[in-house]
Image (cartoon, rainbow, N blue to C red; front, side, top):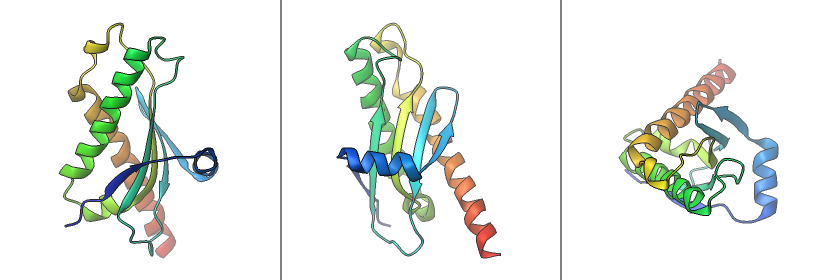
Length: 136
């Protein structure tokens, strides 16, 4: 059981390519832009980026906390997951947060992780349905 390595996305060209070709998924407080891995690509690296826009939270302290929690939730989700297909289906993940509390300590990992997990599962199921539809 190989855990995929999480690496941050770097470079404007990479971001442009991700946003041009990826699928977008939305939840109540979380959004994600995801590029799925091709079936023949067995590289165990998942490139990720987290976003907390200035429009969401004016204070950098809050934005930085949101980004830390998003990174940690991604790490824990892939570490705890038993499903190898789930782990190996993502190539690029960009996750963003839509709302911010007044104080940085009002947002906790237990609030962020289930929302990120639900949006990743939603994306995985939708991709699974699309790939099964192509095979039939």
